[in-house]
Length: 266
Ligand code: GLP
Image 1: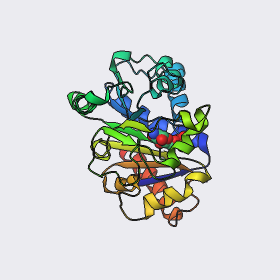
Image 2: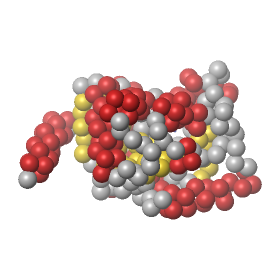
Image 3: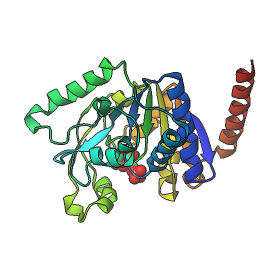
Image 4: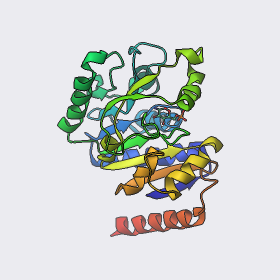
């Protein structure tokens, strides 16, 4: 895991966008895993800017979203499909046929088959090259709530009361927040070739310190990222505030940039 601590949310978003840009320039048909929530909004805004101002093209990009609420149709105000369309897809030159968000209206009796299909579709495109993740206050990635198997695949997951409460800010009433979701599994996420984890704000400081400096446990599903070969964590100062080895991460970040410069010069 490499940890980058940026001054604020805007810088965090810009740094993450630069990484996406770099990978996209190397592989125009990049397969991206995408997340919803308020955290990646700044990254998406920056990607839109790079597309508009610098001509960064998403024409051949394929995307797979992590999750969707079960029982919510694509055009529902709070569907993750709609979130992605409004906050990213409609502003890019992406081919909508290459966009995948789990179908919240999949029938309960067909759900296992549907989840297998989602997994096979990821495989068909050669797997996810770059996965973007946010993190819930309870350490969930996607909707992999505490206790999710670290080897889990795309499936139905029941949300915790904490997540329902956190996400109720987007709904008129807490009772409207769905109880179930379809989410990629922890095992699915771990197969991505590279992962970006984003977190900002004080409310994420505790879970970030446990995720990065605690033990690997299914009680904090994000902690399994410690076992992945290529994870870059982008944090603002508030989210990083409880990390014990902050100075070391900053030292490594500086040294890495220097090393990359040297490698480019040769
Ligand atoms: C939801 C999503 C997660 C996201 C989390 C955090 O539960 N399923 O993918 O990481 O929210 O949201 P926020 O970024 O708004 O804190």
